[in-house]
Amino acid sequence: MSYISRLTQAAIDLDALVKNYQYIDSISDTSNTIAVIKADAYGHDSIKVAHALQDYVSHFAVGFIDEALTLRNAGVTTKIIILEGPFKEADFAIAQEHNFSLMLHSDYQIDWFKSFNLATTATQLTNELWLKVDTGMNRLGFQINHIDQVISQLSIEQQAQLVLCSHFSTAEQLNSSKPLAQLSKLKALVAKYHCKFSMANSAGILNWPQSHGDYTRLGLALYGISPIGDTSTSAPLIPVMTLQANIIAIHTVKIGDTVGYGDIWQANRDTKLATIAIGYADGYPRNAKAGTPVFINGEVAPVVGRVSMDMITVDITDLASVNIGDTAELWGKNISIDVVAQYSDTINYELLTRVSKRVPKIVITT
Image 1: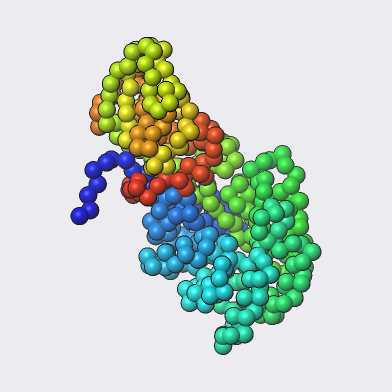
Image 2 (image 1 turned 30 degrees about the vertical axis):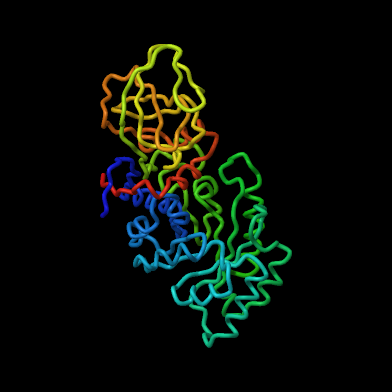
């Protein structure tokens, strides 16, 4: 029997998702905007997100082939790029069968690719061939001084389908000189091989228009969160996820009383508290400090005490009217996830992707 008693949920606004995509796509209108939906679409439910966007995008991108197969099994037919490439040689056959493009970043993957081509009768490359180039991120990718040797191993037909890809390490920093230095390295290779390229992530799209290239990779901003903290730029973006839970208890503590595990918070006045049905097992950060804002009935209440596995407590003494069953927003359209991240010494990406499977993702319309 399927039954949901608790009202804790992540409300997913798919209309906002589409609007965010269209807005960012209009900024880079000469590029093909790839929707990055790895990590379960940054915690938003990749299947729901893919179905909402498939009429607008030509390519999705995910981290690894398992994520791509989940989408295919759900009826998503759009081309998919596997950003981390193959983890096994067998991934090439799966990629060919399901119309995936594997981004190759290491010599062992090139060896697998060559072996796969020799072992199959297919003579024509039907998808573009993506190669990752390390221009300064120093995480994945072929070194600049090695890429000639890599490309020399490709056939003329494969080189004709080549897309060179790299990744910014400081695209969110407008005063950094590194993004343009990285872009210059990649563009020199693009000019040499007369191929397509992809450099810009969300911050690159917004901050470095010269990096848009043939493909941009839209991740965080797709979900309505600015990767650069610039409110003037982020204004058109609409948060897609609203994390919310209901109030399950209200009580008053006296001056000097403590709240929660470890007695880390003590009342300095008679305090009215509300207990909300969400905790770190749901993905709400355990290290959220006292004062982290929660939105209730049009007003803001601060978290007090330590976050528990299933519950948090907030100070509602100064709120006009709060009742058991009322909905509290933990982040979304009224409480910026960036603010919660700051109070929790983390980043918005981590908060989104840590929302747990026990929190239902409920599609809403606006």
